[in-house]
Amino acid sequence: MKTIYSRFYWLVGFKTHLYDLLLPQAYSDSFKRLAKSIHTDKDYVLLDAGCGSGVFLNYINLSNRSTYIGVDLLMSGVSNARIKRRFKNLANRAYFILSDISKPLPIRNQSVDIIVAHFSLYTIDIGKREFIFKEFRRLLRRGGTLILVEPSTKYSAKRIIARSIKLVLCNEGKFTSLIKKWFFYPFTYHFGLKFIESQLKNGVWRAVDSAELCDEVRANGYTVNSVEPVYAGSATLITAS
Image (cartoon, rainbow, N blue to C red; front, side, top):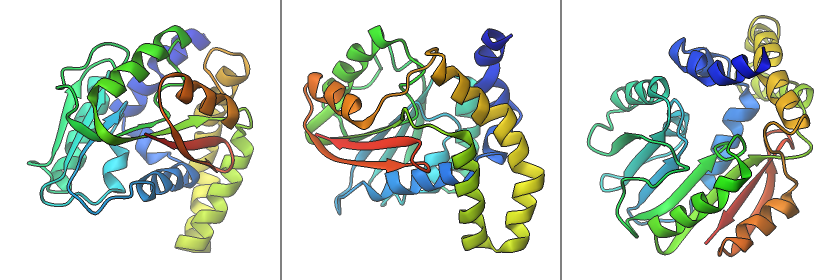
C-alpha cells in the first residue's frame, strides 16, 4: 500500500492542486530562506532542480534579464508551474524542462549561475546522487552557487505543523490560523507529513544530519559556505560553491 502511495504521492498532489493548497507555512518559510540565500545584484540564470509545481517562483524576484529554468520529472508538476509563470507574467524569463535530474539534462555546460534543489534529492537512490552532483558541476559557471535543502534526521511532522500554525497566527491573524489548524493542516499532517516522516524513519527515503550532508557535498567537489536549520528544524539548508 505504501509503495503505491509513494508512487502516486506527488502525481496526485500536483494534478489535484492539493500539493499547493495544503502546504504548511513552515515549508513556505523554508522557500523564503532559500530565496534569501541568493546573494547577487547581477542578472543570473537559476536552475530549480526538481521544481515540482513551481512553488519557488512565488518567492524569487527575477530581474528583467535573469532567467529561471525549472526541471521536474512529472508533467502534472510542470503544468502547474507553467500556470504560475503565466500569473506572474514571466513568459519570457521562466522556462520548464520535463526531465529526470538523475539523468543528463539538456542544458549547456557552464550555463547556470545558481542551482537550487529544495527537497529534491532525498527520494533518489544514494547511488545516483554522485552523478547528480557531477551534473550540477557541469552546469554551473565558475563562481556559481549550489543551494540544497534536505530533510534532517530531526524531521518531525508535529513540530512542522506547530510551527506553521504559529507562523500563520503571526502573519495572517488568529482567524486564518484557526482555519488552517482545523480545516487544512489535519490533511497536511495525516496524508503528507506523517507519510514522509514514515518513509524517512524506515530508510525508504533519506534523512541526514547537517554534518553528513556537508560531508557529501564536499566529497563531490564543492566548498560549503553556509549551513542553517530550516523547516521548523526538520531540514538543513546548505549553500556551496
